[in-house]
Amino acid sequence: MPIEIERKFLVKNDDWHAQATEGVRLIQGYLSADPHLTVRVRIQGDAAVLTLKGGSRGISRLEFEYPIPLADAEEMLTALAVFPPIDKTRYLVRHEGHCWEIDVFTGANAGLVIAELELARPDEPFTRPDWLGEEVSGDPRYLNVNLARHPYGAW
Amino acid sequence: MPIEIERKFLVKNDDWHAQATEGVRLIQGYLSADPHLTVRVRIQGDAAVLTLKGGSRGISRLEFEYPIPLADAEEMLTALAVFPPIDKTRYLVRHEGHCWEIDVFTGANAGLVIAELELARPDEPFTRPDWLGEEVSGDPRYLNVNLARHPYGAW
Image 1 (tube, chains in turn orange, yellow):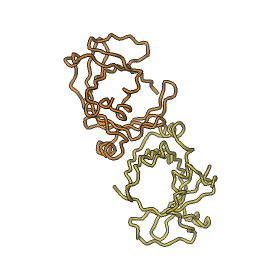
Image 2 (cartoon, one colour; image 1 turned 180 degrees about the vertical axis):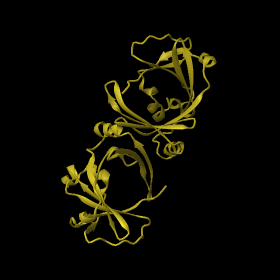
Image 3 (cartoon, each protein chain N blue to C red; image 1 turned 135 degrees about the vertical axis):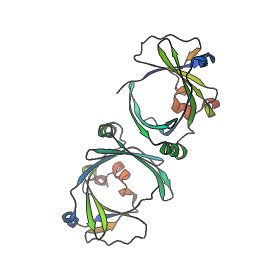
Image 4 (cartoon, rainbow over the protein chains, first blue to last red; image 1 turned 45 degrees about the vertical axis):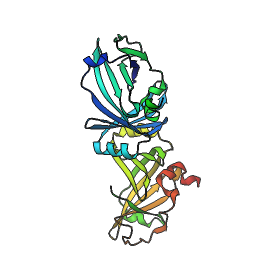
């Protein structure tokens, strides 16, 4: 099972936008937000994915992901989500050999923009783009499940 | 979404066995037993299925079922099940135009044998085989999720 190392930052300004790919809308919600079992549904364009994650065991976490029909995902998000789904547009920005994911939130999290970088190992070096702001990797408020539970607009 | 009408009975004796198909072992466990969302994993021979069920809304209930790899199912049942999985062998018995499912439980539910009949409508007539015992359709103790939570052996 691969271990994800992800660093998460705020952004200082919109300068990243000039280098970004076209945005892709992501809608994701949680059918269970229990720490023992997270059940997430994500819609990305016409594709939908169901993800089950177990509780954390040290730095690893069991994760199972299955493609599901779009209609099922829509029905789950409408009828079974425990919080209103998160709605965001994801842009990709290449910067000196790394690919940044920039998530621009709308809805209850409007105003929030997060830049994420996935690394192969914790000490992998990377250069910080000029538009990069404060690191929030350790702040649980920025976890997607917590942004669903307690959106940025209510902070 | 189809509505399941299922009647559930105890059996009086083993006379059903002479007419039964070969048994198929079923192992099933629950990753969530929340009334709002049940997440069930079932292994039947080499096949595994993940089922999500929403809370009851009147007599209907949202249900989504997906085949998953056997190895995923085994890992889920080992690491994420909230109760020890149910272990039973299912036999089919045809009787005057209906197909009965007879579940013989082992493990913590050993001693329990349940006969189930699925009907197309609530008032569909059927003949009771001689071996059929007391009806337990309305008794929540016999729900699979409750047999996992509070097994027959502990009654």
